[in-house]
Length: 259
Image (cartoon, rainbow, N blue to C red; front, side, top):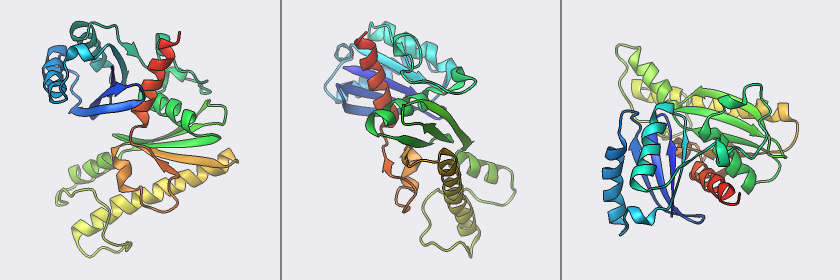
């Protein structure tokens, strides 16, 4: 089986994959100081819950936006699974699409993986919105080429900045407001309205401007854990796929295996 590792700024997701099927999915907080041995102890216990051990894994692919985490994750693959890991965007796992931007090497692995999976699943021009530590908007044209995008502060970053730089505002949970009113009557409701509806307005505005700039019909795909906050809003997204990044890792692994 394939162990697909998506190392983001906030969390690292380990997905155990059998072909296209994701058999198990585990998440741990990102800490570049965490050693290969620490990962191994943690994974050994989780694999045991599935009735498996390290021998069940015969391939590893890593996609990371945290360069300092790559060494220990690669060491994990070599020491405990006895495989040389693939790294998304490099070598046999190089991006299969054209990167039509001045600095193609600056494309984050998570965004590249989303593009690979989205283009494989949908025809035409695409906008992929990924709700992670940052919220990113990526444009993929009908040929699969990456054309550019937008990076905005993630919703939790926005809330952290609001609470961390004010003396009296409390910490609140991010959730969808009870109603569509944008006039709050308490401090907490006013904060929630500002963060939630402010974010909806940003999404709507950026998507509308991007559609106009593309000038052709566009399909919008959302991914990332916080996409769940907005998936019920009519007209925002055409599809929501929480496994888009992992699917991209599976596809890059298949690409490498076919070479």
